[in-house]
Length: 274
Image 1 (cartoon, rainbow, N blue to C red):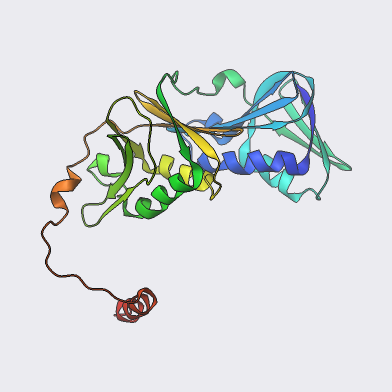
Image 2 (cartoon, rainbow, N blue to C red):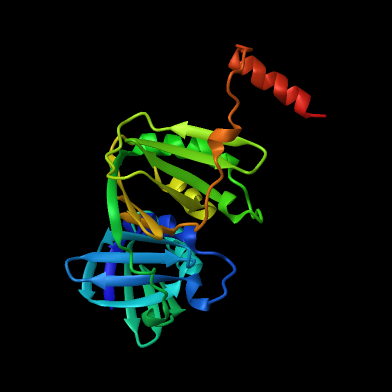
């Protein structure tokens, strides 16, 4: 394998994919990026922790095709330290991956691409287009209420409910509940609920922006996939039944309080000291 690429073009997908690479791994290969250099001038970079998989691609000058896994954090640190506008060359010779730029030269140990775990074959049952900023709003307004390492495993994630052409995000840790509706129409064939695990939700929130472009949500039996430009994030789903959140939302309340938001926040901050 042999390719060359600009630093800024290389750094972007590396920074995106590093989020799913855990620092402590049960398998050594999970601390690596999977590199796939393909004809047509495309470099694919994959990271996974066996639950969430992120694939990003970048344009590169590919002289020799191939695939290999390389240490993720070491490579990212190397690319970050190179000067802006630097040209980077990468060559695989035997089991050694060499990165060179100007007078700098780094040789990294590798592991075979065959050792890298592939996500279970993803079979899309249905695809949904949604505006990116609206999806980001759903995540921002609800993800804070997810449980973290709760024995009720189905609470350690975010419920996405597709019902009667609407999309609703729900999260709770048993003490608080956050619900947010998507304002637009969602084209879906049948009503369904999926629970996206906590790490998958955090990675989704990191990827989506306030852009008004469309992103594609692919729904499978055991996975969900977000496709945004050259990025594809696939997350396994939590196999469980989310509690009936509608039952805990108070109905028939007869008192309402209206307050200035900024003033209320400041008052809460003062009280929270004690």
